[in-house]
Length: 274
Length: 187
Image 1 (tube, rainbow over the protein chains, first blue to last red):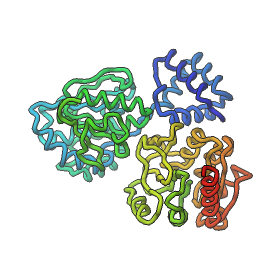
Image 2: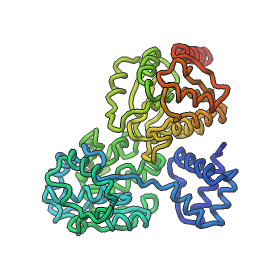
Image 3: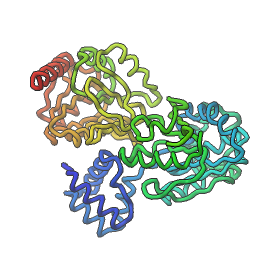
Image 4: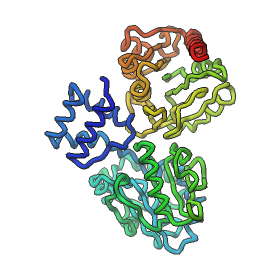
């Protein structure tokens, strides 16, 4: 199946116009692959036909929108990164008397709770306000509930141990049938809200931005926009944590940050004017 | 290039034969354990004349280099010649998946692409090879007889009937030959 750029653009324009979801600045390779999968799965002959079905059938449009959004996450994902957060980032955060932390693109919340656990163990939780945002209301609702399949807990518990655990993972959730619900003490200082990295504006005076494996789905220009958003939202000396295979190296904002830890992709906002 | 079981040795030997000025950039998916830390690429870099590294997100795809997909990420190629890494669900039970690399490379490069599928014990890569062939690209499959695990190359041959089937030595000759012709054309 040959997908021309014009056809793809026209499809994305239609999705944006009719449903408000904007994938025009997503990684084009990712978008094309997803479209091609949807064509095969729904046995649609052409991208033109796919466009018409999406416009006419909101139910079908929802499945397309689901194709585009990726919500793969886990607690203490890349545990060595969380170990670095404990060892390198926490001591820096301790220098502020009050902290704002922004989890941008928090998906179903696993990494937000991971961070909350670390903040509790390091004695910082009570002077922290955590903002967890995502553009997808459905995943945000699940994040807020903090209920996860019990079958995942074993892996999360292992990750937690590798992250430099100071307690027992079982203290942080309650098991019920085949689910585990996160302890309410972790939720106390978390505000869950809708935020779109493509269209919404900055947060103010944030000391830590966590945004791991979210921007990889954007194209280079939208990544730049998001890096700028983070830069403006961070206070001087504030910290940005990206995914393990992301880098600011190819960004316009490369020089606005210094590298705090290379393997963990943790950056610090440089002091002074741009 | 894509390979799975038995691929490491063949890819190593292939890359070690390439001269420093080898002008065709190479993207590689070799199935590895999810906890692999990329030290293999670093090790290979010391032993090869071209640059060998794991790809970063949005890194430009440049000549004289070979890029590996990192463990646990799909490797995609953008039209503008940069990489994207994603954490989507596994494809053909694999992440990274050869199908994902081949499919997106075929979008980006169409007829200016060579896809090489080698030894492996599953069928990842066969669909991707078909995408490359349909977009006018050139398809090479390792002769299954010479493969440690013949399932993957056989699936490749089944998917693209007119694929060029070569043993590993002939694959490296093919690449060196392509490099010489390209040099000749531009000199």
